[in-house]
Length: 434
Image (cartoon, rainbow, N blue to C red; front, side):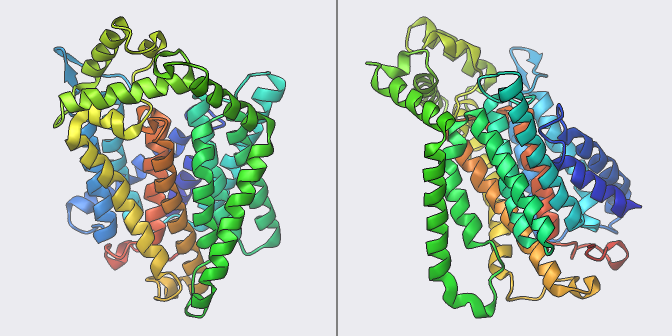
C-alpha cells in the first residue's frame, strides 16, 4: 500500500503542478502523510538514509534555517510567503523525506507525471493567450514563474521520453516536451530562453547512459549537443513572441539615458541589482532582512535612485544578490550548498551510469532498465539545479511558493531514484518497480 501511495504522490507532485492552482500541493500532502507514517521507524533507528540522501536532508534543514533568520522583525512575526510560510515548507519537506528513504517512486509515476504536467501547462498557456487574449500566459502564478517551470517540465519530459522503451511513449513524451516549451514561449519569460541552450547541451550530451564502449563517441555527442543548442536558438529567434520580447529589452536598454531609473522591466532590474549589491555591502554578514530591504528600497525611490515602480516588488530579481542583501554571506553560503549538494550527487550518478552495477538491480530483474531510470532521474536533477541557477540570474525563484516546492519536491524524488534506499534495513527496502 505504501508503494502505491508513494507512486500517487510522485505523480501528483508533477502532473497538476502548473495547470491547477498550487497543483503540486496535492502530491506534497501525500508525501508528508507517508513520511509521517515512516517517522516512528526513523526514531527507533530502524530506518535511516544513507550518505547521499542524508546530505540532501541536511541542506534542506540548513536552508530552512536560513529562511528562518528574520522571522521576527520590528517586534512582530513575519507570516507571509517571505517569512514563516516559506521556512515552514522546508521543515514539512523534512517530515516527508522518510517516505523516499525506504522506497523509491516508480519510474512510470515520474515519467507520466512530467508528461501530463508539461502538456497541461502548454494547453493552459494556449488557452490564456489564444482564447482569453492575455498578453502573456501566466498560469495560476505569474508569467515568469509559469514560463520557467514550464520549461523545466518540458526538459524533464524530454529526458523521460528518450528513456521510454515503447515508440508511442517516446512520441507522447516528445509532444509533451513541445507543449511545455510552447508554454514557456507564450509566457514571454526571457530568462528561461537564455538558459535553454545550455540545458539542451546537457540534455543531448547525457541523453543516454554512457557505457564502456561509448567512450569514443564524446566528440560526436559534443557536436550533436552544440548543433541542438544552435538550432534551438535559431528556432526561438524566429518566433514572433521571442522577437517582440527581445526587441523590447533592446529598446529599454538603448533608448534610455539612465535605464536603471526608468520604469521598464530591464531598467528596473538594473536598479534592483545595484541596490541589492549596495545594501549587501552595508550588511555583509547577516544582511538587512526582508523589512530592512523593503524600507531601504522605499528610501532609494524617495531619493530618485530607483524607478518608482520598484516599491511594488519585494525582491531583487536576482537570487544571489537578493540573498546577499537580506541574509548576507551566511545566506549566500546556504544557497550555494542548496545548489551544490544535489547537483554533485546527480553528477556523480551520471558519471557512474553504465560502468557500475546498481544496487537493487538484481531485485528488479532488469539491470538495464534500472540503470536507464537512474540515469534519467539524475539528469532531471542536474537540469533542475542548472535551470534554477540560470533562472535565478533575472528572477528570485525562491521568493515564490511554487519556486520553492518545485525545487524541493522533484529533487527529493530524483535523488530517491538515483540513490535507492541502501541505508534502509532490508525489511524496508522495496524492489525497483516497473
